[in-house]
Image (cartoon, rainbow over all chains, first blue to last red):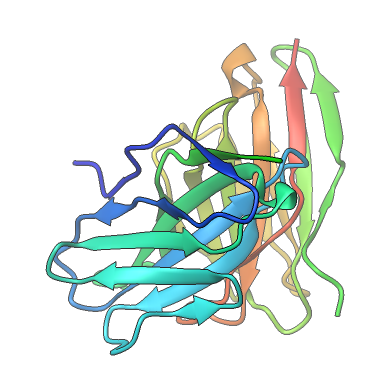
Length: 116
Length: 113
């Protein structure tokens, strides 16, 4: 079963507008972590934001915020005031710890294009 | 603080050969993770090393192997290379097996011809 689902292969947004990238997840582990990474064309995975399953508040990091809806098992990334440099692939990932094995499971990604 | 460093940046090998990829974690990080990203696809978990031991491996054949050295750097070996092994190989490190602070390197792009 797909653990992380990103249903938007591509998204377009105009500079200075906000954009939401969707991510849903599936787990039976009560303790888990959710991550968003940005991958520019250079290939490096850049950490953006983290949300723990027990965190009471939605995570925020500068222009990035995570809309965490635990009951719906969704963890959407919101980028406010988009910039041209935000054009990249964005991956949602989950860390499970139910077996003691710490690894990240990634979604298939969303390509974001920011236009002037 | 130096980030996760991977070498080489690019590697071109012939089918059937062996490839060795290297990763140096951030100072103080003891866990190293290897991921494969084939063109246009998401990241697939390959291997996880912590404190010199292999802790978990993904659904890859045994010709994918590696090790972690006493200084926590790691090596990924791919034997009997096949064309479909062509991919970006990313290494990540974290402070301990329980820490969520994964930091990725820039990757090694392996091309098998």
